[in-house]
Amino acid sequence: MTKAELGQMVPDIKLLITGGREARLSDYRGHHLVLYFYPKASTPGCTREGLDFSAARDDFTAAGALILGASRDGLKAQENFKARQGFPFDLVSDSDETLCHLFGVIKLKKMYGKESLGIERSTFLIDREGILRREWRKLRVAGHVAAALAAVRALG
Image 1 (tube, one colour):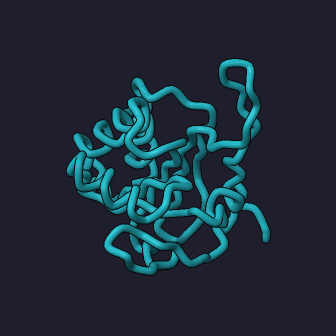
Image 2 (cartoon, helix red, strand yellow):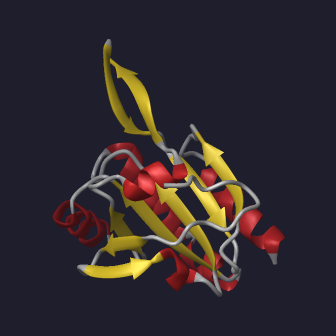
């Protein structure tokens, strides 16, 4: 599979999203799409990030953007995470890692001296036509949502 590259059309793939629905990346065309990847549902940093995006959702909507969160968690874990936190946007269950590999977010991580493959916290901004315009990798949760919103507004 090809990788998503800045300035290029993002390949159209199928997604399994909360609500047990199938969608395609092309379904979001006509809106800017903020696609953020997080390591694991219901963990502290991922919860904070989701809540930050939730708090700013009306601002993203006013700027013409939709938000979509993604991780390798199964659909049930994503459903529970969304319901528990009241996220006003869908989450992608990418348990087969297709979306993760498309955006190259699976990285070797080291925690407590052990190495494992996991999601590197990242966000991607796809414009209304499906072109990848911005990417943030190895990001910190604090202040990130404001930076993503500024980038969406800059697209107009």
